[in-house]
Each structure stands twice: as C-alpha cells, then as structure tokens.
Length: 248
Length: 318
Ligand SMILES: Cc1cc2nc3c(=O)[nH]c(=O)nc-3n(C[C@H](O)[C@H](O)[C@H](O)COP(=O)(O)OP(=O)(O)OC[C@H]3O[C@@H](n4cnc5c(N)ncnc54)[C@H](O)[C@@H]3O)c2cc1C
Ligand SMILES: Nc1ncnc2c1ncn2[C@@H]1O[C@H](COP(=O)(O)O)[C@@H](O)[C@H]1O
Image 1 (cartoon, rainbow over the protein chains, first blue to last red):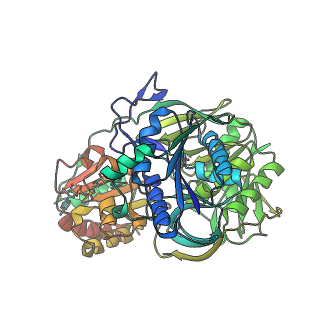
Image 2 (spheres, rainbow over the protein chains, first blue to last red; image 1 turned 90 degrees about the vertical axis):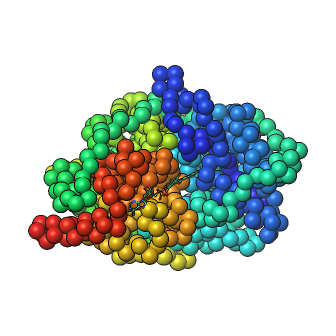
Image 3 (cartoon, helix red, strand yellow; image 1 turned 120 degrees about the horizontal axis):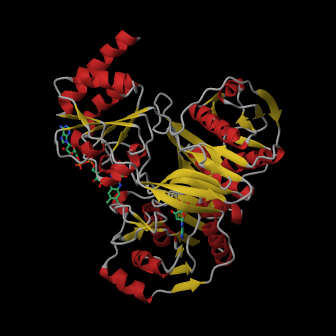
C-alpha cells in the first residue's frame, strides 16, 4: 500500500496571533511552526500501517522553503520520503489542485489529510482532493483499518459516530482518535539523523488559480472585565444569566 | 437566479441549524435582490422554512440516508436547476463533509466558518473565523458560483412572514463506494454542535466519578456536556467531548467551564460562545480574563447549589 500524508505547516498552538502589513498578513515573527495536530495523528496512523502492513509512507506539503523543517520532522518521525510543491498555499482549492497532481502521478492508494488546519480552519482540502481525484472520502475520521483493497473507517458525526465500509483509493480527513495522544511520537536522535539522508523532492507547481483570497484579518475586541459572583450567592448568578445575559 | 440553501433534517424534521442557514440565505438574497430556494431530503413538512425567508423548497425523496457524495451531487443538480450563484450550508459534521465536494462539483470557491451576512456581494466578501477563533478573516470568493458555510449560532434565527412552496425534486443519483454499516449515537443527549448551552468540566474535577453533578447540571439546562483535553486524554470522558483548538469548537449561547484553567488552546475553541461562566477555586486562573461571569469557589460546593437554584428557577418559570 502506498500512503501519502498531507502535512500542513501551522503556528504552534501557543502562538500569539498578530497581523502585519495593514492586517493583511499573519505575523510570523517569533512564531514556531509545527505539523498541524490533525496531520500528526494521521502520520502516526500511517506509521502503524508501515510497521504492521508494510506500507510505504510519503509526506507532502504545498508551500515555500520555510516549510522544509516541518517536512524533515515528519521524516524523522518515520516517513520514507517527502515532497514539497514549490508554491504558496493561497487557498484550499488551489492546494487541492496541486495535491491532486501529486496523488495522480504517485499512484497512492491511501491519502491521509487532516480534518482542518488549525491556522485558516478551511476544512476543505481533503474533500476537494477526493472530488478532484475521484477517490472515496471519509471526513472527521477517528478510526481506520485497511484489509487488501477494502477499508473500514469510523467517522465522528454530531452526537456520535458511524462506521463506514469503503475501498481504496481512499482519502480521509483525520483527527485525534486515529491514534491516541499517547501514541504520538517525538523524533529521536536516530530518526533525526536518518531524516537528513531521506529524499525531500521539490516539485514545480501546476497552474491553479486561487478561488478565494483572504484579504484582511481582525482580532476580536478586547473583553470587558468578568463579573464575579460570591459562592454564597448563587441566586444572583441565576438571575444574571436570566435577566442580564438572557441565556436561560 | 436564486440563493440555494441546504437545510438539514433528522428523521424527517428540520434541524435548528436549518432555520439558521435559511435565515442567512434570506439575508444574502435580499442583498442580491433575489429569492431563496431550500433543498431538503425526505422532510415531511418543509413549509416552516417559509417563516425564515425561503420562497421555494425542493424536497428530494429518491435518496435514503446521508451520503456526502450523493448528497453533494444532488445539491449540485439543484443549484444548476435554480441557476444559483450562492449556495449556503451549515457547519454541521455532514455539511462540512459535503461542502468541499459540492464546491468542486460547481467549480466554486468555498468559505467555511462564516459568521455574518456578506460584507459585500460584489466582490463577494464574507467575515469568517480563523486561527480557531483567535482572529477573524475577511475572505473574497472570486468564482462565479460561491459556497458559504455558516457557523452555528453565529447569525441566529430571523423570522420572516412569508410562505414557501414545496416541490418534489428527483435528481439523477450517482453511486458511492462508501456505505454506512452502523451508527452509534446517543439519542437522549444533546450534541455539542447543536447545543445552546454547554457544560464543560476540567481536571479540577479530580476524577470521572465526579461527573455526576456535571451531567445533572447539563440535564437541568438541557445542555450538552464537554471537557478539556487532559480529561479526555486521561480517559475520564470520551474524546468526542474534548473541546478546544485540537478538539471540537463550541459556539453555544452559554458555556459553563468548571475546574478548567483556561489555557490558550482551550480558549481558542470556546471563544465563539457568547456568554461564558467560569467556576474555579483559583482567582488567578486565566479563564477569568475570558469570562463574562465568574465564581471563585470550589466546584464541589458551587455546582450542587447551582443545580438547586436552577431547579427552583425552572419551577417558578415553568
Ligand atoms: C498542542 C496542544 C494542543 C492542545 N489542545 C487543547 C484543546 O484543544 N483543548 C484543551 O482543553 N486543551 C488543549 N491543550 C491543553 C492545554 O494546554 C491545557 O493543558 C488544558 O486545557 C488544561 O486542562 P484543565 O484546565 O482541565 O486542567 P488544569 O490546567 O490542570 O486546570 C484545572 C483547573 O481546575 C481548578 N480547580 C482545581 N480544583 C478545583 C475545584 N475543586 N473546584 C473548581 N476548580 C478547581 C484549578 O484551579 C485549575 O485552574 C493543548 C495543549 C497542547 C500542547
Ligand atoms: N499547504 C498544504 N500542504 C499540504 N497539505 C495541506 C496543506 N494545506 C492543507 N493541507 C491538508 O489538508 C488538511 C485540511 O486543511 P484545510 O482544508 O486547509 O483546513 C490539513 O490537515 C492537511 O492535511
């Protein structure tokens, strides 16, 4: 089985979010970038397929040279090789078109992407990629087993989950649950050394225009001070929620 | 030309989110000077949509259970039939599943997590949340046809005195290689996505055996239950309840955080909730800075009292 894991390169979850150039660009100053958490769960599940079922695992990012350390980290975790398509990730549709080319040329059986990137929260790349390559697609995937060309996937739905039977080629939008938090791997010294020798192929992009553009950013208005209620006066809390906040 | 909206249902009944996206579609249609067509699947009585600004309903009855690929293709056919330039969906798990497929089918740009009526319709510009609620982002959709995903509880329900005609619509059905084998859904519980009120517990509750009072509080309020990440990592609560940057987003009207410190990753996921109440022993807990109302106190004393007072309140206001 040939697996491709899509890696989105995002600010670490503790990052302060600021903007520059008249609020049109994310301010990367002092920000550390990481593998998108949803992709990290997917990559770890891919490692399981590699170790238990002999799959090969490539990782891919659509982005500039600045994303290479993130791809190297994925190699250090255990991916066999990395691909970077050398173009800025302008919008989800354009990214999906670039990925579609990689998927078609590479003949992948299984593509593991994340439910969403934690930066722009688009939640669209895996589904668009599935539509563009005519593959089966399961979103919000919290469990995945593959047996020959058949697959069983668990999808989180509002208020529960469902089990889906499907087949390869398959694309998933994955998240926590694919593996447990405790299964995530931190690259060790040996992995980091080996990653330096693994191939990181840079490909030129295909023509793909962005269908949407993020023109401006804004930060939420600062919050007013909290109204404290004494623990001996919970009646007051109920009355505030009813009369002032009008939420009960 | 019209604005098309996918109004979801469950067991033949429209969901609350359906009325919200219908209200949103009406706002877009008014801006563009056109009408609203809603698409429903197997809804027994869709006329209620008229009260939220829908002019016409296409009710599809030749499909059964939800399948993202088949539904997306059916919606595409409806959009083409109505010559829709804007297609609106919700932010439910099902809508987020099918929207990217629909966007590719219509060759449309797609903006998700939209929280307000369009800033302008030419260029078509919408305000959406990004960086998991740490920021807003204005996005222009440059394609001829646009797909807009509306965040739940962001626009609200807007009543309109109107009436909707309901027609049956039978799109040609494509096949799909994904089949649902089994569904595991707590039918007696409110899901986080649908909830107006969410009651959430953190590590301050000490252990899973103490969740009885959280569930009781949720029951009194008709709320969904949620938790912080460590609580689900420790296995005290199911993963599906984990909210935050790496969990589920919450956009409820009321979020009650009990024994949760308010780490940046947790706040990111709950910032979109309108009113936040924090119960925590530590007055320095960062969550108080993000809260509207706070009680500095021990959850094991405050929560039982709150349950009692709410029961009294409900008895009086019944
Ligand atoms: C990459 C990454 C992603 C993350 N994503 C998320 C996420 O999506 N969601 C999330 O929640 N976290 C996330 N976290 C974890 C986050 O940083 C915090 O560790 C976590 O939110 C803390 O959970 P907590 O508030 O339940 O526990 P704690 O921080 O241990 O806080 C417990 C609180 O309970 C209070 N308390 C103790 N006893 C009582 C009592 N008797 N009554 C009332 N209050 C009491 C304490 O004062 C304290 O404030 C993430 C972390 C990382 C590194
Ligand atoms: N620039 C990118 N390069 C590679 N994969 C990406 C990129 N952007 C998004 N993805 C993948 O698509 C998923 C969802 O991203 P999004 O649709 O942007 O929220 C991510 O979790 C990644 O797996």
